[in-house]
Structures are given as structure tokens and as C-alpha cells.
Length: 540
Image 1 (cartoon, rainbow, N blue to C red):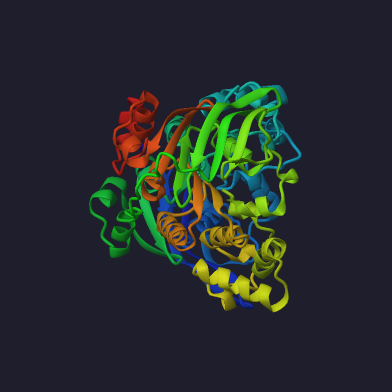
Image 2 (image 1 turned 90 degrees about the horizontal axis):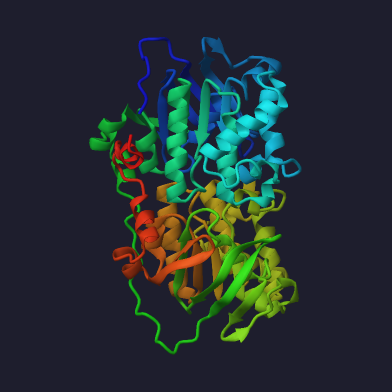
């Protein structure tokens, strides 16, 4: 925690802020009469469910309202200067130099046509703070602090050439390039594994302390907020529920709603008997080595997914989790090894698989924000795989789309005609699930499908996936860095490190009595609801 001077005037002062969104051709309040003070060197945590107004409030702290929204009233003062009504040119001078923003979806925020280094250097060079060579040297320093691999080289890759977790760390470094006075962190560690998260959280805190930076820390992960924030503000439906110093909030939340947030993520699926020793796996990787360019990411790994079971794959960013999933889906043909389906070889390139084979393996992507076409209505998004894989058209196709929406607990009449930008993060992810189900697959690969969701919505998502597995008999391969998710949803688990499997077995055995040091290290790195946990882990 930082020690800020609360006797000085706040760096950021928000009063009676109201933000409106255009819904059904009318303006409706989505943030109502919010007050907020933030001092230099202080971190304020914003928590609440999806749709609570956390990110909307964070953007408003920069004098910004996203498309379809407007600031309906109130005041936002930064260092004594009113931002609301300030001319665009003056706002642009502040944003990026004195105020920075770390977006939740790094994949959507980076320009895919430019290298990470070019995008890092843009702000400090444009504002005259550093020369290009100085900015590059500074990038190397921050990349190293963020534990990015090959910190002197990774900046010259394009966004699509690094993992999601690496891209999120690159964005955090980029936000710090000008050493701003205020940083809005919008879920900056959701894409990170637990071991990397500890180092990144420690780096963020050190920079906040070193440069006396003020920070708004938006997160759905209560344990992470407990490590980062001096104070916590709880929001619901755009209104403030309560606010208190972090230790007091953790020990004695006053509002019933806050107490319910503290109690989520208790779901556990019913235990299943292990498959018989002679059972044929639904899908397998056998002695697979795969990678990109000349680098091997997977090194002679073998894994099996059995019918009606969930296999979780965990490990640090860059360990090969998503690469294994891409191989199974046929998106990345391996250099050596075999891919099997029902005990028979499956072509490693999806383009050479039959339509029936393609139908049987589907994916739900990590970033629903970028996985759904924003120009297509929900009915069109779901109707396409229904037509492609099941051959349905006309009324039969429309009926199937409505049925799919019902399966994911979304009212067809309300959502079938809507576009993805009008949906919450949880609603978008449910549409991603429905799109995968539309093909009536046997195996669904879930790539970090709950990482961007608040804990209440994530728990509902896991319950939904478990219910669908029971009703449809589908199998899941669950790529995740969240150990709590593994405990909740998985039957079997594989632990990966540096492209190899270091431990595997049933969840109760691997997580209950881990045999490998690396697995024990992962389990010890899961944040706890204790404000001093991070200091203890980092030896501070």
C-alpha cells in the first residue's frame, strides 16, 4: 500500500458525475451522482459486477465517454483543471502524457500494423520527453520489469506474434512510458497467470510509489484489489454501494451486496468416476512438437480428453497452453506427432478436415470483444454455423437460433436482433458459447473464457458450462491460469511449463497433493483476501 498525503488537494476530484447511454432511442443514466477523490501516490480500487459502471467511470476520469454514451452532468477536475468541456487539443495533451489508461483488452487496443516498440515510443517522442533511442532503452527496462521474454527483442514483434498475457504486460509498460501522474488500470492482470501476475502487480506498485503516481485500479478480482488498493469503492448499477479503507472493507463490509461479492466462487461441479483404463479418449495429442518460425513451443507432449469430462490445462504465460489447443483445433499443424479423434488420426490442418470433423471440435475464444463481428446481429452470428454445419435454413434455422439463446439463458426476443457492442462482457461470452454449441460439437476448447469476467458472472458461466455438459454430453478442454476455475469445473488437469507437461492427473490429486515443485509454486501464487499477502510473497 502507498502512503499518500491526503491533506493536500486531490489530484483527481469527481463530483456528482452522471453518465448516460442511449438505449432504445432514449438517454438513460448508467452512472449516477458519483463522487471520488484520489490523491498523489494513492490507489483506489473500483469493484463490482459487469455493468456496474467501473470502466465507464475510469474513462470519465480522462474526460472521455465511449461511443453511445455522454456525460450528463457533474465535474471531473484533474490537478485543479476541469476536464469536462475542455477542448480536444488540450485533452490530447493530457492523455498519454499526464494521464494514462491500461485497457482490459490489449488485443483490441494495439494497432496490428505496427510493432510493440513503435507503439511504445509514440507518446514519449511525440510529447518531447525522450528521443527515439532513449524511449527504446526505457522500453527494454520496463519490458524486463514486466518479465517479458527477450526484453531487448520482443518490442520488435507485432501484436499477433506474442501471447495474450505478454501483450497485456506490453500495454502496461506502454502506459508507463511517460511516467504519468494518473493511471487508470482497467483489469490489467486478467490475462496473466498467477506467477507472472505477482511480479507485474509488484512492478505496478513500485512505480506508483517511486513516481508518486495516483491510480484507479479497476478489477473484478477482489484478492488482487486487496493487494493494490489503499481504499476500495464498490459500485452496482452505476451507483456507489460503499467505500472504505481496504483492510476495514475486507474485515467488515457494511453493505449486504458487498458481503455477497466476498462469498462468490464457491461452485464445484459434482465429482465423476475416473474413466476406465481401457477407455478410448475422445481427442488426443500424441508426442506433439509444435511452434512458430524456428522456435519450439510444445516439446513432445501427449494429452487426452475423455468423453463427458473436462480437462484443464494450466501454466504460466508462454508455457504452451493455447498452442496445444491450436494444434488440436487444426490451426497450427505440429512439426511432429499425431492428433487423434476417437482413436483415429485427424489431419493436422483444419483446412483438410471434413465438415463433419470440423463440426466435432469447436472453440470459445478468450476475448469475446474481438471474437464477435460487431457488424452482425446476434441472430446472424449464431445462424451462420447452424446453416454451415447442420444445413438448416429459413424457419428451422431461426428456431434453432432461438433455442440456442434459450440454452445460454438469454431471452431470444431481447437479444436476437442486437449487435455485440450493445452487450456486456458476460453476454458476449455467452454468445461465444452459443456459437460453439451451434455446431453440436463433441469437444469445446475454452480458451480463458472467464478471465475477463467479474466473479459473479464467471461463477454463472461455469455453472452454465457444467449444466450444458450434463445435458449435451460435451467434453471441454479448459485453458486457464485461474486455479479457482480449475477447482470448480475440471475433472482432470495438466500442468505445463516451458512447453512440457510437468504434472497431470485428476484435479483432487494434483491440486490436493501436488508432487512437483512447480505445481506447488503455482498454488502458492494464488492471491488471497489479505491486504498484506503480496508484500509477504515479494519479501517486502
